[in-house]
Length: 268
Ligand code: HPA
Image (cartoon, rainbow, N blue to C red; front, side, top):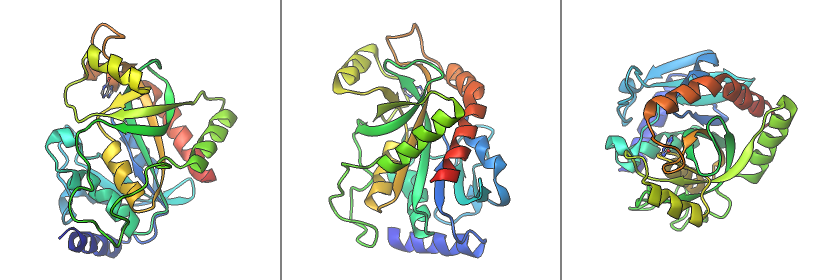
């Protein structure tokens, strides 16, 4: 049962010394090396953790890193699980359950996304999302210990956290936009017709992650800050899409991005 797995994994990680995280960090494509800046780090390979998924990220073992970042205790996922890799959503969102069980008050979720309107290099706080994955990680028996059967998604992306993010960005002289993230299953990029439809639906960014994790975070009462790094114009707004461009743009902006997250952590 899921609850038994959560208890087993929580006990294992507490035993490793991961005892009092305040914030969970879920780091998106190309943004994972923020975890390298964590002080007093306790690092555990995903392969050692009971009930944990297997990372398929090329050239990346997949590590859970606990320690201090900007003076706050964080639990960071270096390598997240995606639905398109074939992981069940229970696996994709299991780390969020563990963040809650270990005592986190909030999670910072980051991703690379295609821009609908916004262009490459834009950083955007997520104000809300549209779930187009066709799935929901809460389907199945409800974990009453964590939250209700029918969670309210009205305020999934915590307003107070967004306000902090904007204040910090302003102090750093950085431009930070706001927008709605539309989550798809992937792994194909969207068609131009899909993007035209998503634009009409009110989306500003599209990507293949985040939505399942935020649903589970909201279910268990975790506060959420979501930030998208726009790496390309979505399909139809530029001539072609490829992963190399996503990597190239995240590499270019990651120092700025890391600086923003670290400065936000001080203020949360
Ligand atoms: N679509 C979906 N996911 C993405 C994109 C995109 O254009 N860019 C980066 N991740």
